[in-house]
Length: 125
Length: 210
Length: 285
Image (cartoon, rainbow over the protein chains, first blue to last red):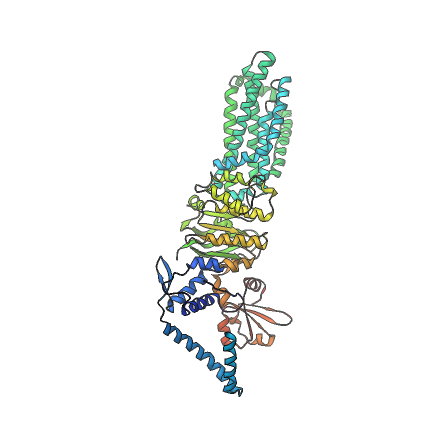
């Protein structure tokens, strides 16, 4: 499992861990029922505090992506991918909302925005 | 505590050559005059032990040992026992050598005079130890050296002054009858002296903050 | 969560220096970074915990036991690295093994020699021939070889180059994989602690001025940078300390998000432990 931590991004480390594990679960890179590294091992490998990894896992448990089995460890939960997709779509909608507001206040046409989107999509490939 | 005794012995390992030289000197001297230097080896025990105190303080061993289990409790005891063990061994060697050499030279062995000489050596050695160790624990090695100098010098001075007013000759003559018991008195004095010294050192060490 | 170490109202008076009511707790399985200037009281606190100095007021509990009544039992399970205090340097590392076998019941000779090999420390050379870094590593090897549960380390990384520091920090990280263990680590090299510590306790002038999880500190505290005119509008209650330079004002704030909500300032920086220390000690209120 790859997790890349940036110390200068301004995003709290526990959130970086949480988001990256979440992404891996949603993209099915981590399959449900898979055992995750223990809090301590992960902290050691990522060179961060135990409290950080504990926080990340606790939030993942709270959001339903991970289940904890006492004295055994943390496992990837049976995630309803539709729900997860819905969540991501919500996020995108929010971001686009900002884009649209910004475009409207600056009199930028919808066409220009879709063009940018097309270019960005192409680049991503 | 065994560990701490071993520590002092391990520290003396490097002095092995010096000991061999001293042993050689002693043997040579003993062939000239059997009982001249019986105090040499035992006395050197205390002197070399003093060097271990210097090394200890240089690396702040006393603070470190206090962080170990029973360190503070055993540190002083280990030092005394290590010294006494060393004195015991050297006295044993000296005694055996003196007897052999004296027999070789004169074909007779005067056990009682050898005994007196050896006891004298032990007394001088343990006296030095008993004064120095508490002084070292209290003031450190450097100041303790000065302390012992003052003690010896002071005693001589006071003795000198007092001799003008007190007739020591007279007192000694009164005490001559004790000579018969000297072989009992000296060991008792040694034991009491070392014990008191040890208790004083221990009390100092217990309160000391490193 | 159980505490492996508790210090309650520790006070100690010297003629020129005083520890004032030091209190902090270290939970099991955690590493606490103990930071402060030289002379702030780190070593005095550590020496009190270990009873190297006595005559202090207050209570110290290790593994839930009193550090004076159960001293022997406690010390069997503590490993220490003390700044500048160690075996006399005419001894050899292998002598330390001979001695320590009789000092700790659980001394593990194999483990000790394994550390010596891992750290590239020759066991037959007098300690005085060692470099400063080698000596530190030897002290650490000695502290770890009786399977301690609590490590108390006073400046264990001072004098080490960055590579050696990293090696040493990794050892502590390995050590803490066992949840029953704990580490109290004093240092003024704050970057080391940023990587390893779970808790930060900050001592200044004999007083604990904060003891928190590192995540709380790094994520909540912030440095606000503003102009003098902006500074004048800010309520005294909303910052901890400030520092003025010719060009700007720097404010240490306890919660950067709340501060952002209340005031409209452009620059709020993430804080490093070093900034925190400097502002706490040198800043004004």
